[in-house]
Length: 504
Image (cartoon, rainbow, N blue to C red; front, side, top):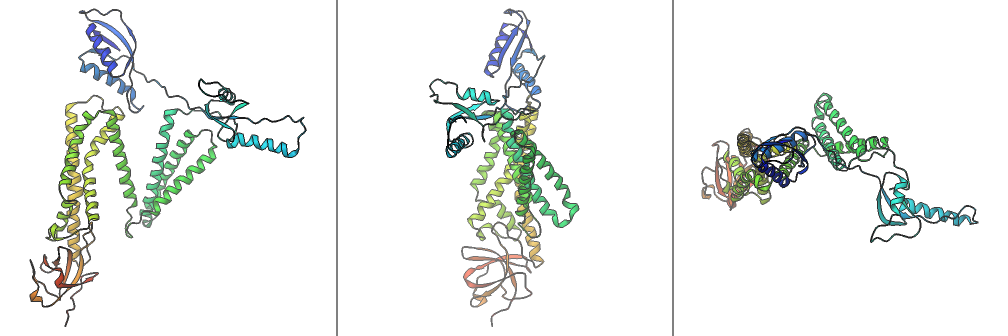
């Protein structure tokens, strides 16, 4: 890079680069005068977290951001990526090789077999291991390192050798050597392939009844997952036989697909397994995006994105768990939340759903984390940050209003329509409307009724009860009323009967 300026400009740049952890490898241009402008050429090494993809552009923009913050006249002339990922070497274990007497020695067959057994156990079972770990590319180099003296370590006496995982074998040569940091990414690739196979199995089971044409395309996705797992396994273990790796990958992806297919039928009519797996995968991707954003930013810069989420969480904690969802659902029947008692477990589940809807706020920060990781948004700009913040608030509103409160309202309206048609409404987080025949205990005229009229010959929809009071919904009057629970004998019905039998 070329920096044009005075001595003060050069000192500012060198100090700022040192604060960033960037090393100045070379500087040319002679002595810089105190007042006159001149050019000075620098060669620096820039290190920053992120993906290798687009890293060259990310390095240039990071240097330009630093230059613009210091108001320097700096031009980046050459940028290239430095590869410093060490090659993984085969691992060996040092052991003391048992003494084998020459074949000219007169030994019994039992002693000769005992010597061979001792050697085999030392080479394959680790019976004589010294505990030293050696990394070398060949057997001869491993044997030299196994016997090398280390300060402070006790060098074992006797003949020290080195063995591989399953004996003394020369590792096969690999066309593409495996790198250490590259190997840490291969397990993640394998996990993604297995999750894809799990989703494929669930999706095929969901659509199997629709015919071959509805699910055959997902089999191609399974083949892609199998290929991805095979390539990742070959990169992690290049010395293993190719046929064995292919067989293991096929078996693993097939098992994952069968596992997904066997856990999808939560409802007889429509499977929901593939959707649950997809939502879980999206949640994992979102959390990983937040992790990448936190790694790129400091907590001081991440806090403004976290404040709206914390405010939403505090609001939800100050209200009863799932209060808003129950209020909207019961409003379709004209019933208040205090009139229906819901078990604590279902209240907790409703609160979790509301929090999950609020977590849609983190979709934009997660995308920003991936953009930072891929070096697509290095030069931050105020209008773009304002747009991202507005999009986060919009996603929060979509999650709370559309997926949370709106879904509760739609569930209440669907339950009301099924009740008007005479069917049994579905359960909503512990609220289980049910058709009943209400038989009075004593005279009907002695039963206090709040908000309606009790006719024992009519069927009613029992919405719930709380504090000794039952809430019944009248399909004819299309309104709910409350009666004491101890004044009625309730007989549950699967669907709305034409009339209820009364006691003579």
